[in-house]
Length: 336
Image (spheres, helix red, strand yellow):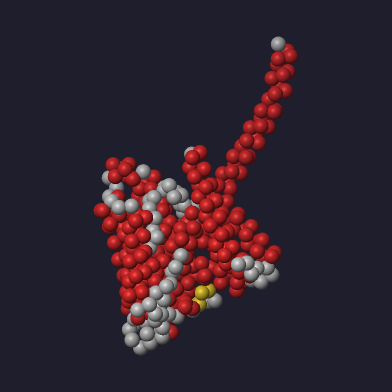
C-alpha cells in the first residue's frame, strides 16, 4: 500500500504538468485561430521591410491602403454574401458599368457632383436587388445568377461606352479618388467609413444577427420566423451598393470611365474575405478579418512589385494562398 501511494504521489506532478502543457497549447491555438491573420500580416510587413528599404515608409504604406481600399470595399459586401453561403461574381462588372455611367455625367460644368454619384449608387443598388431577387424568389444558385450579372453588366458597360474610355471629368469628381483630407487620401477615409458602418451593421443590429443565422442554417432561420428572402435581397443589394462605391472611387482615381475596369476584382474580393477567415460554408466571417485579408493581398502585391517579382508569379502565389486558406477552413469545419 505504501509503495502504491508513493507511485501515485510521484505521478501527480507529471499529470499536472501534462495538463498545464495541454492548456497552454490549447490557448495558443485559440489565440492563433482568432488573431492568426493579423500575425501573418505583421510578419509579412516585417519581411518586406527587410527585403526592400523603400517598403516601410509612410508614403508607401498609405499607397498600399489606398490601392486596396477599392477591393476592400467590395470585399466587405462579398463577406456578408458569403456568410449566408452565397457568392457574388458580378462585382467587377458592376464596377465597370458604374464607371462609364458616372463618367458620362461628371464632365466639367455639366451636372452637380451629386448627380453622377447618385446615378452610380443607383446602378449598383439595382444590380444587387436584381441578383438578390432572382436568387431568393427564383431559387436559383447564386453562382449562376451572379455569373449572368457579371456577363450582362460587362456587356452593358461596353455597349454604353461603345467600348471606349470616357474622360474629361470635373475636378470636384476627381477629388474623390485623388484628393486628401489632412494628409489622408479620401479613398482610405471612405474605406474606413464603409468598414465601420458594416461592422456595426453586422455586430450590433438585427440585420447582422439574421445574416449569421441564415448562414448557420437557413431552414432553421425560416422556422424561427426570419424573413429569409427579404434579407437575402437586402444583403445582395448592400453588396451591389458597395461595388458602386468602389466603382465611383476607381473612376475618380483614374480620371476616366473604363468599360474594362474592375476585371478580376470580384476574385480579389473573394480572396480577401476567405483569407480573412470568412467560411465558404457560411455562418462565419468578420469585417475586421476581411480588411486584414485585403491588406495581406495589398502588402504582398506591393512588396513583390518592389522586389521586381514577375506578375505571373504573383498570380501563382495568390492562388496558392487562396487554396491554402480554403483548405484550412475545411479542416477547421471538419474538426468542429
